[in-house]
Image 1 (cartoon, one colour):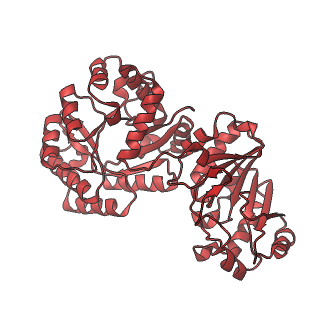
Image 2 (image 1 turned 90 degrees about the vertical axis):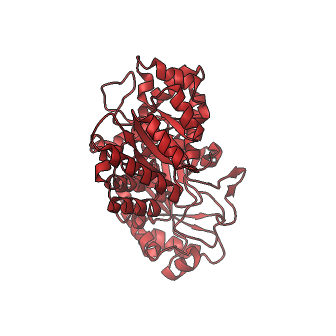
Length: 463
């Protein structure tokens, strides 16, 4: 893939995705979808979106009450939504707004719910995700009365006229363009996109599972299809699709405060003929011999991550010919199984590309991190596991590796190795040649007690 996109609006908690979500997310990542803003329509929906995002950081949850559900708004609803917004990892308040086309909720209740959610967004400092249908003037008037809105927001699935677009742009909002821009009879919307909406204030979205773009109308929409929307924008503005993808992604990164771009060489770097994938700097240990807290560099590579890369960012950094390497290694100055969804998704993609050997470098804490066995899942995508042992007794492990929680002790590492041994073709325990590390005792534990290979690693070795 040559560029990345962000789907700024999708309803992945919808029942249309209940049985197919893992496949839909793989499809999105493999198509270059970097992140998906998973929009909530109620507090229950927000909690479900939050739960999905905990298990897959491709997803970015919002918290809000849709205007169709505004009749359910109450002081209790408001308090619950505020509690969620203050306590969860949400990127926006919404979907909120006004809808004068349907009458699923009274207009008065819509206005009340919308105003209170605008004020909540101001309180918690999050942007707004706004729905509007046949109510642009009233919506703008409410927003003007509530200014300033320092975090801004997006008018999603915008389909208004140029004058309406200019009014929201003057208020500091982004405009989200969805599948309607691809429809044959949407010439006026494409004209507004071309002439009125500057590229640096535009987002692309699918509104999945609704509004599938041409040429997929009539099918269930999904995030991978946002490329058709970006292409429609590019055609309307007479610019390259890659330019639309790059700018709309930058817009979304900034609006939802997702962090800066990561240089591809920080994510994927080559040593000899192996490709190493740096997926996290977070770790379950704080080893005395690890340079992570002082520097994150190796040879000419700067491996410090200001934020963690998405699956699609990793795939883009890998390039088009991963099969040309002797092996691909999940590593980093951290514990890769903390990014399990990324390891598994990228691993599946690598398998489809015919990569000969996939290796995981780990502390052996993956089962404890996820509070379940992940060995079977790993076995489906990795051919080899290298586990950092570094001590032969619990006391030495605590002194040298300094685990961040009691469950990350040496006993857990040994349990992981024993479970991995029959499931994964090659399991190796390793120890760093560092003063205080009893390498021979580690060798004995690995080879004679655990029955796996042993490797002594030079200090600062990445593998």
